[in-house]
Length: 145
Image (cartoon, rainbow, N blue to C red; front, top):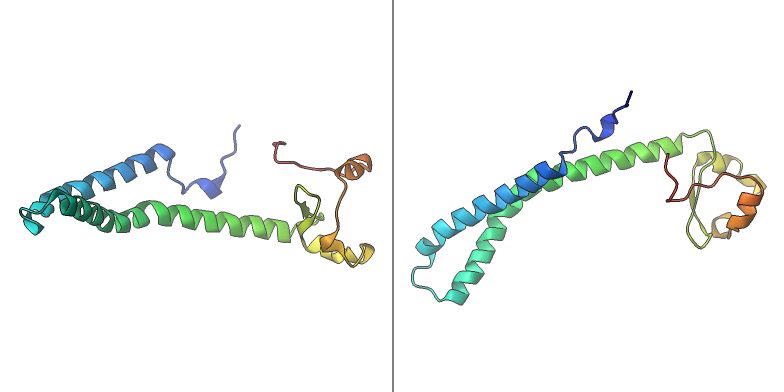
């Protein structure tokens, strides 16, 4: 039986987001095309094109923020807080090492045993082959759960 991740339940499907964006842009352009002849009767095509683009941005931006960007941002912030909380309260030591072998961050469990590490722990370089040879588990971005 599949378990559903409740953290992502509030994210709309990509198709829903696409149609939301298309609908907002369509309605903003339709309103712009109806209002533009009233605002600039007999204007040159260059001025009309600039005014059209300006009105399209001004009319669509608040709706794009409210219906697309804001929900995605709030979900991203919630997931970031969730991941940070999990890493901070993990019993196992978690060390983040970049591709050059430099320690970027670690959680509180590593901080508790840091007395066993040299004082330059955060600037240390780890040899990936040495870590694998000693049987320490390494997760790369290519490995999936």
